[in-house]
Length: 272
Length: 280
Ligand SMILES: Nc1ncnc2c1ncn2[C@@H]1O[C@H](COP(=O)(O)OP(=O)(O)OP(=O)(O)O)[C@@H](O)[C@H]1O
Ligand SMILES: [Mg+2]
Image (cartoon, rainbow over all chains, first blue to last red; front, side, top):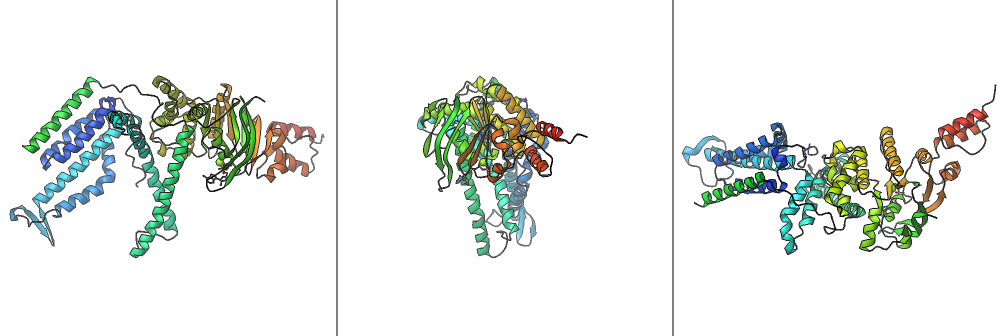
């Protein structure tokens, strides 16, 4: 079910990964994501799993948690793989020595298998890295780190505080909105309306009938939210308690240097 | 009168024209335990939102500690620091990603030092029994747990007046007892309490002042005894009297010669029955 998977589910702990500065973790996940898309073929992408593995080890979390986190993704992964495998991406006819098998209209090629594998790995690594971040960093620290990272942009009137606040509120409300949609769908299905079947016009009508209450409820929530925030004295970023600067340790600095070096290496390699 | 919060002729209508408060005047005594009762739609929640300046009346005045409230930034800041509001619906009140983060929201808005914020959050977590939930995502909590967390979020702001909108609704009896115990502890520490309740039994046990709202107007303010014992009057405004009062009337109808005022508590009822019991 969509309801019980939570990206933001933090698991408290005292592992080295938990203790890292949230900024370090945010930067590393960001760099890792970009890096993954610069890696061209399956072998380097596969090897990119090594730092991830080390990170999981350093988090002292059971591997199971990460696998559980990937579970809602597996259909997407399988479909992605099949699309590539069945030659969905190539336009030119495949070289004969590359062809593994032919199934009716589909040609299975070595290249297709390799790109499929690479893409699936990329997605899996990316998603694992992101969940590792939220598994080992409390939402408060994520918000806090984000606000500090974006802080310098405040000079150009960039709303760093508001953006960080919005991120944390979004983390909170995604599951709620999901539940709400589920509820509306069920309530409508109970009265015989569905956008899943019927003629196109009926489906379109049903979809509108789903979107309207969803939108209204989102608007009402936004309204309630404003009241709830005001009632507890929120008047924007100024006048709020300023946090002590987050403390980067030597390990944080080393990791950032390593991340930077790895990034430079990948870029040079791709350009050469 | 030593009113902590004083309302005079307060009117409020929602944007769609619904008149929710129509000339409310009342006094919340300092250090008291005031129960606000009234049928669904009587205006309790609306009244509460005006009590800390979140809704602004279209007419009438509100005084806090004898000072007339204006709606400037300074005033509002002070007001919300002094009057904490626990919402009826915890899903409306709780909007942060984790329990701890939500509890720290108010104190952070007050601009306290970071150490002080942390200290208050710890204290609130422990006092409300939400410590084990501190890192849980808010949306995954049970209703009763959410209720506690919303109380914790206001507790951490350490207001002089705590206004709670139906804090007992939907809780099981044990949960209700725990919240009442927590409120008793706050009251001993000097907090003025205002609470909307539907169970008149709780009002009889808990309150030292009752305000009855009907259709946006105050129709009674005074000691609990003055209104809770009046079965007809309560029924006419859509409220059910405490059960000892009901049993008292039933017994009288059945012919038991009970005397005096209808009792509010079980002990008082038992005593009256024993006194009226035909001696063998
Ligand atoms: N956001 C709103 N917009 C329009 N009308 C509203 C809104 N909120 C409440 N009302 C109306 O204002 C009146 C008072 O509502 P309020 O919520 O204050 O009652 P209540 O005493 O808290 O009721 P309950 O016991 O059900 O919580 C009702 O007629 C209600 O329909
Ligand atoms: Mg209400």
